[in-house]
Structure formats: C-alpha cells, structure tokens
Figure 1 (tube, one colour):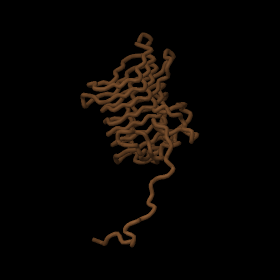
Figure 2: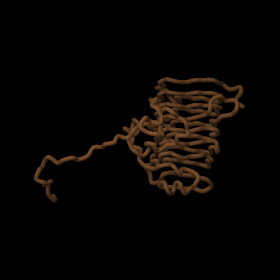
Figure 3: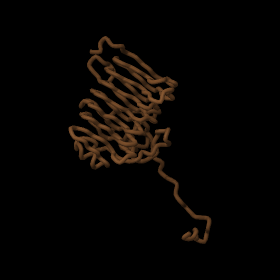
Figure 4: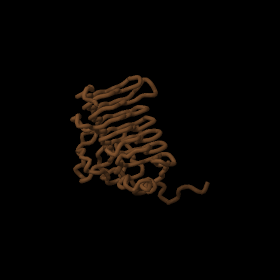
Length: 272
C-alpha cells in the first residue's frame, strides 16, 4: 500500500521552464495536488510535462502543458487511505506528439481537459471501470482517441481527428471508427452523448474555444464549477457546462457580406 509514501504535497502556481526531460516527476505518493502551473519550453526535444506514477489521491488541475510526451498518468487511483479523489481536470495539453496518456487508472476522473497531439489526443490504456472520462476535447493528427483494452466509462467528449480515422479501439479486435456513428457502434454503452468535429481553437497555440460544438454540450453531473481561467461553470448565459477546459459563450453574430461597393456594374472579370 501507499501508507508509507510521500504524502500531502502541493505543487502550485509555478512556471516550470528550461527543464531537460521532466517538468514534474512524481513517483509513489499519496494526496498530491498539482495545480495552476505553466509547464513548457524544454531544452530537450523529447520530454514529459509531468510523469505521475502510482499516486493514491492525485489532483492534476488547471495546468498549461506544452510537451512532446505531454502528461503520463500511470496507476493513479483513490483508496480509503487518500483524502483527495484522483482527478485530471481543466488542463490544456498542446504541441506534443501525444495529448494525454492515462494507464491503469482506477477511481480516477478525467474531466474538462483540452488535449491536442500530433499523433493522438488521448491514450486510454488498460484503465479500470472506475475511470470516468467526460467533458473533454480530444484532437489528434492521426487519432483523436487511442483506446487499448480499457474498461473506462467514456462519454460527453468532443473528438476531432485530422487523419483518416477518428479513433483506434482495441478490445480483442481492432476497430477504426471514422465518424460518430461508427465510434458509437463499437460499444453502444459509450460515447452516446459525445460529438465529433473541429472545436475551432483561438489559434494553434491558444486552446480557448470559439466554435459551437463544445458549447453547452457537457455533463453537469461531473460537478466541476469553474474552468481553467476561474470562470464559472456553466456560464451565466447557460444552464449546461461546456466540453473542454474553457467555459465560453459562442458569439451570436459572425461576419457576413452586406454589400459589394465596387465594381458596381456587377462584372467581376471574365473567363480568362
């Protein structure tokens, strides 16, 4: 058990920069909170924003992470010895090969994260049925979701893949869903309330959201009442939380062509 482990540790409100390989490395602990840190600008091209291994009661929340291997959460769970419920929430993960990787999770909540990876957005590996994955944005260059022998509960997420397939799911056989319908067909108990499409970020390096898909599409029962910026969930203009780390309102009006002032004769060139 972890009764003799390092415990009651808080790492918060730091800028962690110019590290070589690990922004944060925490191995074997109990009741560890890592919150509101900005982790990035590594001196080695191949790096981990955070490597979290075998922690009983770990809260990783409201962190901004730019890292090649992003965050690896390995054997995170919650036992009766912990006072914190293990949770990865309200984080933005960007500019890496992977978005977020969670291995062998138990009694772990993965909520309201925005995860972007050039290969895949989220790696769901051998997680137990007590791992709950909801209200996240997962974007990947090849797969939005890579799931391998996982028993996690997964729903109310936004998936976006820049590749041919939306996801890779292996549960005894390989599945390559390409859209929402084929994703839901893999397991009709999962992703029934998820959505698929471009979240439309503010920019490649700013994962605040402008698009309508994530807006008012989350699950309120998760119980997270603020976003990564401290804004209230749901927003004052809504009764339903947004998917992802950012709580926002969609702008009501977009740009539109009102009149063509010139040329005024209706001629816009010829066939050459």
